[in-house]
Structure formats: structure tokens, C-alpha cells
Image (tube, rainbow, N blue to C red; front, side, top):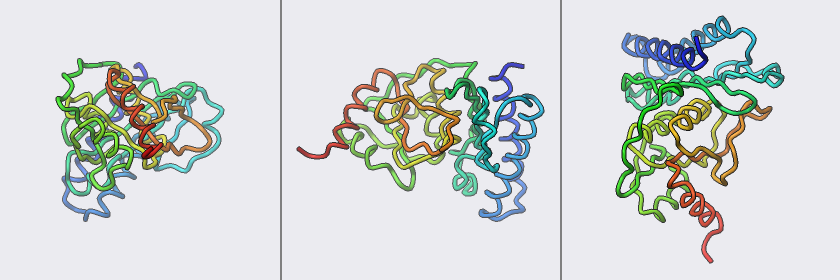
Length: 247
């Protein structure tokens, strides 16, 4: 089984577990998110450790250790991205399973169980046409200042959405064209979405245009840009202007 196949199978199965937990109707919203996280994480971690025992592992729901830093291959996992949306029984939540090799997110899958889809690095699909006007996917609750400024400069419409994985996959699904985030994330929030987006030919970087580097001692990931390559230069230019402020 290839790494990409493993990521896709694990993400899909974890998504089915989360759907079953939610459909049981036995938990309130708060307990639902906590139980879903714990149950999906236990499955994912056990599966990866059995299938790839020599690889490192970083999961949002596991205590981090320095052991992974000495590994070239490290799996980076978010068992439930979008806990709020999952608890609210929305569809914009995701399961992230990625493999970083020497700091680069190269293989992975993002499951969207609420939509019945798994997007993966080894089965890229053709991108739908860009929106006219462009569409920028933003947080449902706290859109980033830079994102709002860039959207205004580009004349782009806003598409509010929950999970980071759902936002990134919205570009591949033809629901949006740009995902710009500057409110702070962690490696598990973006590793799988970046791997999948890059495999589909999208631009992926920090909002200053620098590369995204994974498996670092500090797992915080301050900002992120995923968009069509033809829009990247203009978006990055507008980010620079937004940081500079008025003349």
C-alpha cells in the first residue's frame, strides 16, 4: 500500500467513525466533539503505527515528543478539524492525514465525511473554472484582517466556512478560488490540505510567499495561502500592501 493510499484509507475510515458517533444521538454537542476527537485519533494513531512503525507522528490529540524531530518521514494528523461544525451537525469539517518528508507535506488525504468525499494526493482531479468575480473562503466566525483587505482589493466575494481542510478543499471543489489565513494555526491544520492542494497544482505558501515547513520543534503555523497559481502573485502583492497600510 502506498503512503497516499494509506492516508486516504485511514482518513476515510476515521470519517466513518466520526459520522457514526454523531449519528448515535447519545451525546450533547460538547461531549460529541470531545468523544469524536478522541475516538478518531485513537483509530488513526493505531493504524499508522501498525502500518508505518518506523515513521514519526504528530497529532493534535497526542502529547508531542522530540522523537519525531529526528525522523525524515513524519505523519501529521488532525483527527477532527472543525470541531464546532461537527458538533453543530454541519458538513464543513474534515479529517486530515498527511505525510511530511524532510519538512515538506508530500502525501496525504482530506476526508470531508459530511459531503461523502475524500480528496487525496494520488488522485488529482481537474480544477473547475475560476469564479467571476473571484471568491475568497474565510472563517465563519473571525475572518482574518488581511483576508478581508485582499478580498476588497480584488473585488472578491467572501465564502464563510468552518474547517481549514474544508476551506482548502473548496478551491478544488470549485466553491472558492483563494484561501488566505493569518490568524494562527498549527501544523496539523494545514499539512494534509497543503499536500492535497499542491498535488492539484495549487499555489501553497506562507502569506509572505515563503515555503511552508513542517515537523519543526515549534508546531505553530502563523499564516497560510492556498490559491490558483495564476492568482498567487496578485494576492501576495495585496497582502504586502495590507501590511504596509495607507501611504
